[in-house]
Amino acid sequence: MKPGIHPDYRPVVFRDRTGDLAFLTRSTAASDQTVEWEDGRTYPVIDVEISSASHPFYTGRGRVIDTAGRVERFRRRYNRA
Image 1: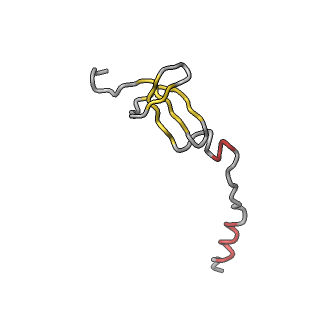
Image 2: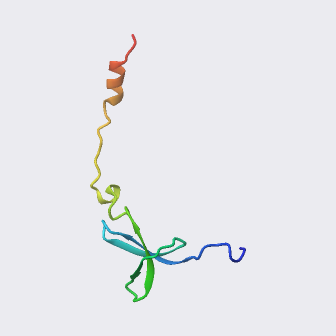
């Protein structure tokens, strides 16, 4: 790799405020905000709008849309016999 052209790869906390989930990982994402983590160190924090803690697919709060019968209804309406 060429030196000096890659962004800084460092520990960053990603936080989902609606799902009360935060996890520490490594990233090149930049942030001006910081948070003190469980180990006592301060890390940059990035707030995300949705994660596995708040997404309806993972939480089971998703809606199921009834698609049965839609094709048949379309064919009945627009059948050119």
